Length: 352
Image (cartoon, rainbow, N blue to C red; front, side):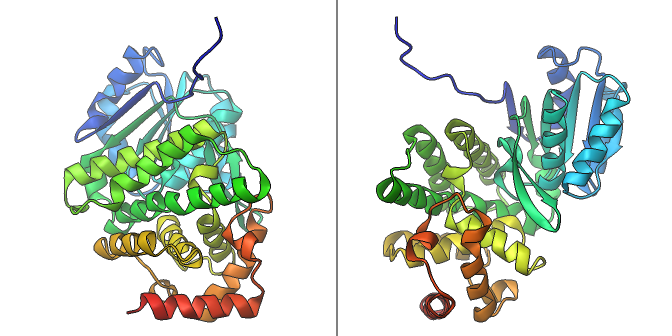
């Protein structure tokens, strides 16, 4: 009999709810990841440290390793620590940087990895990608998906507001990435994966039209689920294509040129809004703008401390950050003067 359905990789267990971390020890045992809790815990600063103390009674045999920063070097340091002793699994607890370091180290050592997220800043919670700094630039590395994902809404609500709401910008940028993928399919014959697109679009649209906000536990649960679904879109596609297009090219260019301008999700939202403006997609532009306004996210270069000239510089550099990717930026092939003209028009149109 022919195989009529594909096999999808995904986490074995996902737990998104208030109080979720209280069941972490049971999760490891019930899923036969680690019956006696012989695991390493990679933890970052802030909320991660608080959360470790809360779960210590259920993971008495665990060793805690502090992760410093989100670089390839930090991942290498973690690998070295993990080699010193046999562990059944690695539990990463913290924000995006800590989880990216933990995913990379676990993949290189073939260790099962459990992701415990303390904020919802971007879609790396359950994605097959680690974004790590190396040689002064952020680079993307393919990694294994986490075996399990835990998001405790109680801890997410205690995270800095800015780090929670920025995930909204990352999720809705999927809509821009999908249009870039469709453009590449039309212009270059790139294969479009309809299932990956469905996951990515559903993730974005589940956030785009909600009227509640981060004060609502239901909203935070939906946001966490959207971020996980974005990760599944990337796992299905075998690349970040359904969730990363011109929007993320602009993001990476700003990271390179102006490292302190904004965080990942904020920049993804601005990049997506500008790319949608370039496509002259008025309906999506209005809906995306309304969503960013509703959640008090940056929309214009000035909102992240950049001038029009600086943002235009990032737009020109953006295609070089992902030379293998074809997006609206590569399609328009904007020279500096043209980029500045489009940026000025964007600011004038959206500032109204």
